[in-house]
Each structure stands twice: as C-alpha cells, then as structure tokens.
Length: 147
Figure 1: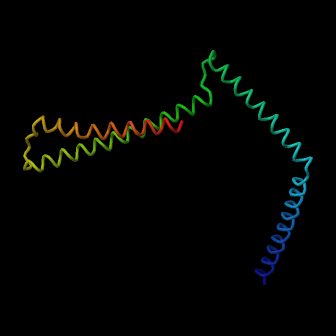
Figure 2: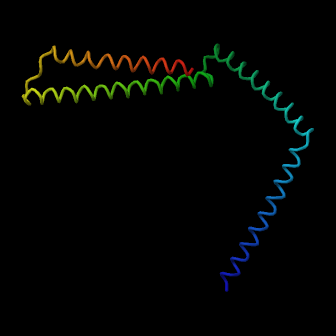
Figure 3: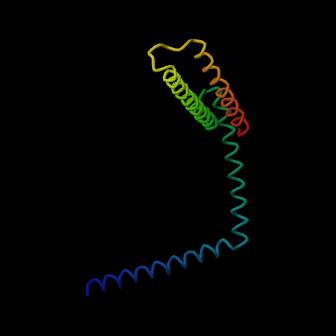
C-alpha cells in the first residue's frame, strides 16, 4: 500500500517535471525564433570576438618584455613534449629489439658466455639505425605537416 502511494507520488512529480521542461523548451524555442533576438546575439558575438582577439594580441605583446609564457607558448611546449615522448618510446622499442636480437645472437652462437665479434654488433646496430632514422624522419615530417 505504501509502495503504491510512493510510486504514484514519484510519477506525479515526473509528469510535472516533464511538463515544466516542455514549456521551458517551447519558451526558449520561441525566443530563438525571433529574428531581432538572433540579430542582437549575432552583433554581440561579433563585438565579443573582436574584443577577445584584441585582448589576445595585447597579451602576446606584453608577454615579450614581461617574459611570461602565453597560451600559444604553453600549447607549443606541450606539443613538443608529446613529440619527444613519442620519439623516446620509439627509441625504447628499437633498443628492446636490439637487446632481443643480441640475445638471439648469443643463443645462436651456442649459448656461450663469450660476446660476439664487434663487427657483428656493429652490423646489427647499423641495420637498426636505418629504420630508426626513417621512423624519426617520417614522424617529424608528419608532425610538421600537421602544424
């Protein structure tokens, strides 16, 4: 009995909320459909955009003698940090591949504790250097194209 009464109360509140929401949405739609309101909003947004652009230019100008970073400077620093992290990850992957290759090379030589000839190591390093250089160049050129 109490549950039915509570459910009925909740349903009544829900219906009243939906009715108020519908009326509010209609009121907003009616206000937005008026041409003079739209024109006023457009002119105010243009004025605000111009003021914001002038303010940003003033901040950029003041940042030079006062030596503080601007929003653009911080964004550029963040991009450079991300690029450096990506390159470090790439170097880390290549280093792990080099270590794996070295371990495989040791196993193929019979698992002896002796290190392989230095010429073999240099050849392996030079083989890994070319793909690394190409990957770094391609990531740098693609990042430059995005900017």
